[in-house]
Length: 354
Image (tube, one colour):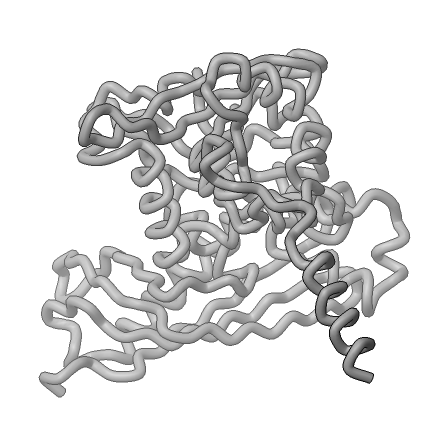
């Protein structure tokens, strides 16, 4: 019995270890990557930290090939170690590349078992190289800038979840379309989040919802962030003042009847700034409800124009209304349906003064 136990213990030592071990000291970790180009001509740019004396600086490496994987392999020739995307935080994609079947370029990185699926994704306007070396003062490292910029956008409901996993899923989905944060270089040379780019199927449509529109669309999609803050100008005693409020809770109810879709949005909010309004809250609520109703409907109209169902209406139609779903390609059907949004806003409280 003792011999058997000894043999078992010794055998277990031979089985220990990890056959697919990957040491970070043998690879170059890439926190930021960018992709541009087109069919059989994919250009990749990778930003990664390097040690320069006692300082850490960011260097870039470029590669091109028929696919993202081949471009990455070719970029390895200009680095000391192989580039590794397992810790990638942000992937930037040229809007021109995204116009023609984005998934074909993402397939390799989406299915690779080591890659981080929670990496942020964003569309960029113009030459992608300017986003790796912007002329403005980033006040920090370039990869950290984009990570913090997109994290802030997510927290403040500027866009729905925009990571590699969600993008790969929705690009293959036929009941909901993808929407990605859209970046642009401002006059000071700094990359700024200006809204969301709308997809129809696997293609970027070229339509961009500006920031307020993107926030409203994100609320319609049921993807509210931690904060959702709006400012509206209201009339009060023949004066026009600006009121700022934060949406605390959203409850929606969707009715589909006789090919007509009605989305009822009930928003609970609190005032952040309320000059001369706290004595007549009902009138304020009425004005804001009317303005929100108009803005919600304008946003839905822009989504229909782009044939982009980023709010996931197709999922409800497919599940409960097959007679509508079976008419043809959902994006075409979505663009033609009469859709109305009715918004009702009420304030939960008025702050410590009340």
